[in-house]
Length: 354
Image: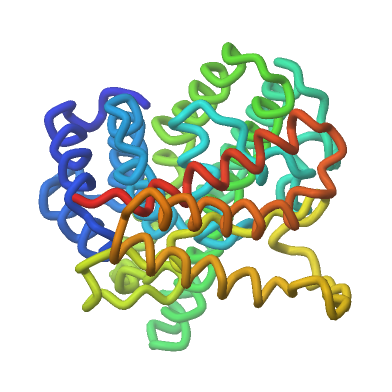
């Protein structure tokens, strides 16, 4: 993270998260209010929240780090992952843990950065390939748009009507979509390489690659888009309202919703873009995933209402039972154990009160 956002804002957002209590839309709005002026851009605010999540993790505030990760997933929605999965990737990154999602093969939408590989080599060369491909692609788009400026102007001058404006805005929006896809792909490729390598130094190289994209390459393309938009007086798109993660109700702020805050189910080899896999029928003696989910939520309610050792232990046991099913197909025993511990740690953090 570069020094674009003042440290005092990052600290303030981190402290705000410690009092979030599960209200992610409120956390996003509070962070936005703290980061007025040049720091109110959602992309930059997402970076500030990610840095604040790292600050919370340093203080041992796992709950705050998780809610900030949810805020990042809200502000910087990924086309390659659900908000839950994206939040899990963010929190694993800031806590230096090996995310189960990051250990999975790359989604289709990210593989072009690493020569189409689902499982790129866990080396610095893979990071450099991904960085170069991402930067080069966006730089070429910027040059392309510069060349399209004159034809777009001629199109507008020949027919300055609403359908022409809509067509121009549709073309400009495609560049914004390319930015979103490319950044998400690079981030996911970095997470995969770092997680499978176990080399902490690669994490820093990956962060540097993302900073380059965020600080130089993406702003250059966005500036070109804005320049073309101003030529036609086309207003910038109005940001959508803050999305709720996993159906969380903003009116429920007394406690976090465990069902909404839980990390996503991890299925090795799957991705958010893969077609759904038909569930395996359960035998009468084997609880279904719905049964395990229900037992986990009920155990959370009991532990939240009365956090005595018995209820807390019961909740942990229910979480392990639920996610043992998800992690069972990870072939490496140590990675399987880490994945399960990762889920349990996130779940237990939801019992922390502000």
